[in-house]
Amino acid sequence: KAGVTQTPRYLIKTRGQQVTLSCSPISGHRSVSWYQQTPGQGLQFLFEYFSETQRNKGNFPGRFSGRQFSNSRSEMNVSTLELGDSALYLCASKEGAEDTQYFGPGTRLTVL
Amino acid sequence: AQSVSQHNHHVILSEAASLELGCNYSYGGTVNLFWYVQYPGQHLQLLLKYFSGDPLVKGIKGFEAEFIKSKFSFNLRKPSVQWSDTAEYFCAVNARTYKYIFGTGTRLKVLA
Image 1 (cartoon, rainbow over the protein chains, first blue to last red):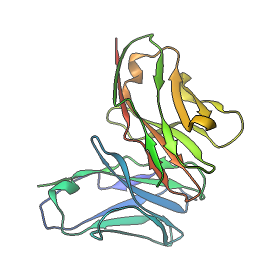
Image 2 (cartoon, each protein chain N blue to C red):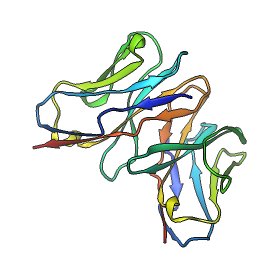
Image 3 (tube, chains in turn cyan, orange):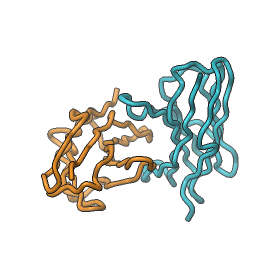
Image 4 (cartoon, each protein chain N blue to C red):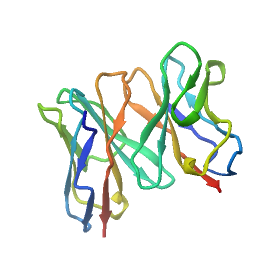
């Protein structure tokens, strides 16, 4: 099976803009989670979608939102970008609730 | 709230030295435990996992981890490290809330 894919791989935006990141999970996986990775902070959980429903949410402001489509593909949107949003955004998928999570390569977002 | 602590943020070892990375979590119920590794320029990969059964689990590349329930710990070990083990290592916990909680990571540098 193909692994988790994320597009784009790199993105440069300016403050105030918005951005949409995309994630395609492993075939058959219905759960997609998003994480923000920054040096020293590790992986911060953003949210998880399962069968098009948000099942869990981390402690991020409302500028961060997501959705999942019927084919399990997921998108994450960040509005009104801030410099502090510069990070590696990781997507991970798993088959069921307690299964192992598999990660994509990430999207490197730089906010200028 | 659930949390995961990795006390060693940076570790430097010479080749053939033994490795032990600490991981402690706070959650009173049943958990699934994971170690992920991120090699330079690569995405997160699963190193090993514990769901139930034998508390000593073996993973890829000669790594193992021991789950000690009474100490809420899941330490990662390798008897003899190689230069290629240079990477960042993340401990993660998945409790019944389904979301993963990650530690802040340990950067391991192995000197040839």
